[in-house]
Amino acid sequence: MRMSLRSIAVAAFVCALAAPLGAQLAPRPTRPQVKPPQGPARQVIFKYCTSCHGIDDYAYNALDRAGWDQHLTAKHRGMDAPLPAADRAILLDWLSVRFGPDTKPFPRTYVAREIATYFSDAEAESLIARACSTCHGVETVNNARNTEEGWRVITVDMRERGAQISDAELERLVEWLGRVKGQ
Image 1 (cartoon, rainbow, N blue to C red):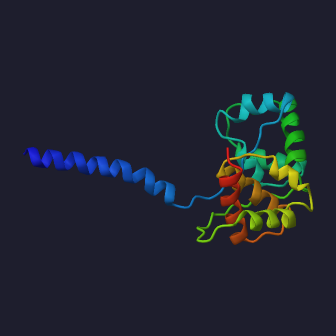
Image 2 (image 1 turned 120 degrees about the vertical axis):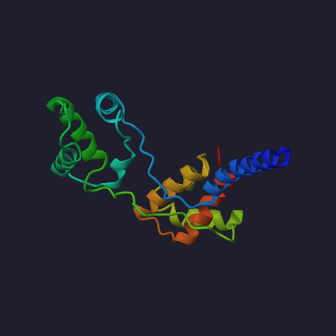
Image 3 (image 1 turned 60 degrees about the horizontal axis):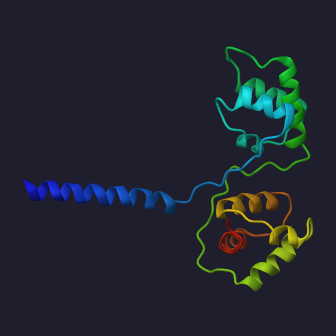
């Protein structure tokens, strides 16, 4: 009896340790990380939106004001209390500027790939100079700090905006940025 209880306790302990490790190893889709706006749009979002959902999903769209209006109507059909017209106008103003038709929506299906080779400092810095400096100075990247997942979100977003970088380069760069310019 004593041996079986001990065996059960050991098995439970091993399973408890293995579950989080397995979850960390499984690839997860990269999600956008939207910073909430300031001012009236922030107040509307925190009053009406974030009690049910986050705002990161907005980044998957690039719509004009009419498109956002239709999107909000479709997503919130059947709600008990509609968004007041003045607050809806504030939200639509922010959405159509921040995620308007001239922006590039965040990809819905990017999943980080496992890498087997890693960038040296020189390789990473060369890629940053090639892929990043067309829109902003290299010092922007050099002065930034972020988590690996934060760097992945930024890098995927920059690629969607036109940075010339392949999937393999992206993941090697993200690993290097997380290691060298992590938080």
